[in-house]
Length: 107
Image 1 (cartoon, rainbow, N blue to C red):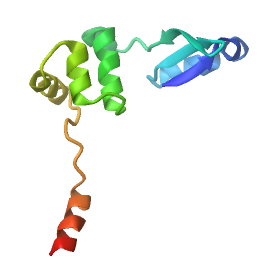
Image 2 (image 1 turned 180 degrees about the vertical axis):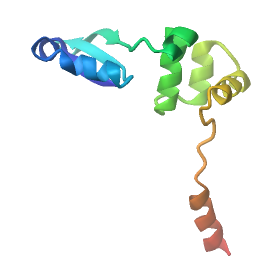
Image 3 (image 1 turned 45 degrees about the vertical axis):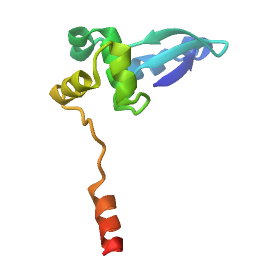
Image 4 (image 1 turned 90 degrees about the vertical axis):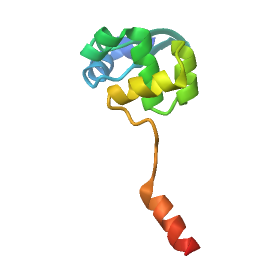
């Protein structure tokens, strides 16, 4: 997510256009205080709903944990894991090479 000041936006509106075309969220600020959120209207936002899409994106960007995502959506962790899985989003971040090197060190 990028932060764009209202004055900067007035001088260069292309900043927001580029952000939306890249399917990024932009927080619009006035005197460093958030006043709005710009979100691209893609299929995911329309299909899932804005709140769910924003929370899933926050999870995808590691801004929310699985528990926080589930709590915010009012569902169980199991339901959240199933939903993420159906959307093709990794639920477990597992670094096989790191584990392999640890095992090599132990052996």
